[in-house]
Image 1 (tube, rainbow, N blue to C red):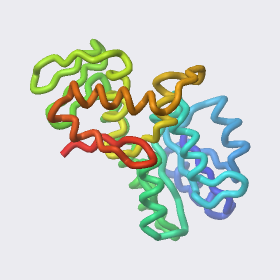
Image 2 (cartoon, one colour):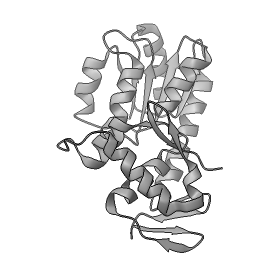
Image 3 (tube, helix red, strand yellow):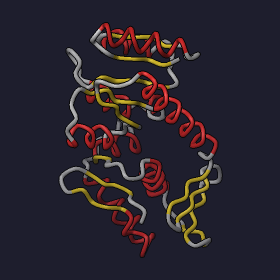
Length: 224
């Protein structure tokens, strides 16, 4: 099932019709209200989000999706009438998998959807291990290796490293890291994240350079 959130009824109908005609099941929503209601009933394979929506923008919806564990890995394609680099970069930094600018060809949209789904399936098959540069994490055994040598991390350091590597090249703000790793009931300040990043970097030694500080926002894992 593919969900399409698009307030222009003619565009929404065209997308749903096109997806159905090539074998996909698809459902359309004109605003976020019914979309969130349906998300509580079933989780789609992919979400198409228009940026310019009434009440709640596509970027706001995307931000919420990436903060909820069970929705984090659902691939998202952004639709926008804007062609500025800022809108594209913002959507990708928030976790979008791809974007397409209006007006677009239906076959291009279908091709992009298939490409994102193929990539997502491949990532799902490889999700028991993470590897970037010379850092490797076995998610089943919780073993972290650098150059095939085991590195001992605390639970929170391990969870931080996994989160950063799973979102490689994406900026994760401190609030998201605090909420996802320490939980909703943790009453510490975001300084807690900075302290654990510092101890993690110390243990990663030369590999600490892959964890970039984004001033005033948070952190990004960028393997060279």
